[in-house]
Image 1 (cartoon, rainbow, N blue to C red):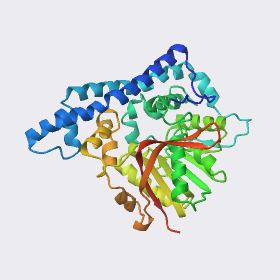
Image 2 (cartoon, rainbow, N blue to C red; image 1 turned 180 degrees about the vertical axis):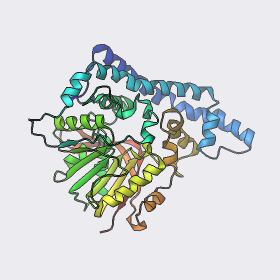
Image 3 (cartoon, rainbow, N blue to C red; image 1 turned 135 degrees about the vertical axis):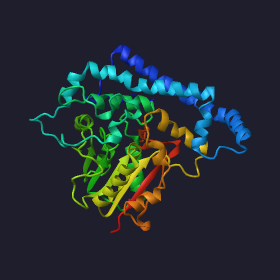
Image 4 (cartoon, one colour; image 1 turned 180 degrees about the horizontal axis):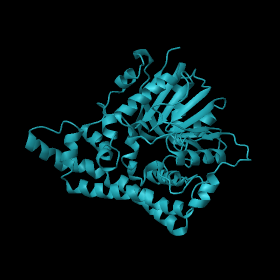
Length: 389
C-alpha cells in the first residue's frame, strides 16, 4: 500500500493516532478480502434457496435481495463490522486534526504578501443544500462542511483528506488522485481532438481529482467549485503546496454564476450520487449551459445498475443507501443514463456515456520512467456528452 504523500497541510499523526489509523486500514482490508465474499456464499447457499422455496422464484431485484439478506446472521455481522469501521474511518483522523486545528487553520490561510498561482473565492451567502445537510454523508460527523473554528476553518477537509485515504486503503495512490488520472486518460483517449482552454470540476472538494487535469492540460485555466468552505480553503492551500494552479470558488453546481458557454470540459468525480434526483437533473442542465460548442461533460460514477449487474451485485452497492448515510446511491444508480442526459438537453448524437476501466495509474516503474498501468478489475460508469460544434 503506498504511503500517503505528506504535503504540508496534511495532519501529522502521533504514535497512538498512527497505530489506530493503521488498525482501521488493516480491519477494512480484512473485511474486504476475507469477509465480504461470504455475503455471496450466504446468498447462494442459504438465502436464495430459502427465498425460492417460499416464493416459487428467485429474488427479482436488489430490493428483494436486500430484504432477504437482512435476516441472515452472517450478513448482519458483516453489516455491523462495516458500519463500525466506517465510523472509525473519520474518528481516527479526527483526533489528529482536532489536536492540530489551530496550526492547520493558520497553514491554510492565504498569505496576503505571497504571490499565489491559483485563487480562492468564498461566498458566505452560499447555502448548504438540504440533500447534503440532512445526513452526515458516509457517516462523517458534521458532514464535509462542518466548521469547528470561528473562521478560516479546515477541520472537515483535514479529516476527509486522511479519512479518504483510510477508506480506500491507499488504493487511490499517494495523492489520492487516481480517479482524476483515470479520467484524464479517458478524456484524451475518447476525445483526442479536445484541447480544453477552460476546465470546471463540480463538487471538487479538496481538488484531489482536479489537479491531474492541471498537469495534463498545462495551457488550460482550471476551476473547481464546491459548497463547502473548509474543503475549498484546504484544497487551495494543498494545491499551492503541490504547485498546481487552480481556482477554487464556493458555488452550488445547480446554479453557478459562470456565463453561458464558459468551459470546454465540465466534470465530476463520484459526486452525482451525493445529490437528490432533482439536484442531479439541475446539475446536468447546468453542465450543458456552461459548455462551449464542441465542449465535453463527463461524470465519473460507480457502476450504474444495468443488466451486467445481477440483483445480488446491485444489492451490495445498495447497502450504502440504507446503512451508510448515502440515501441517493440506489435511486441514482437505478436511473437510465441516456435518459438523464437527454433530459439535460443533449441530443442522441451528443451522448457519450461509457465505462472507465479501473487501474492504478501514474506509478513510475523505477527503470524507464514510464507510467505503469495496473488493472485492478471492474469499471466505473461515465455519464457524458459532447455538445455539437
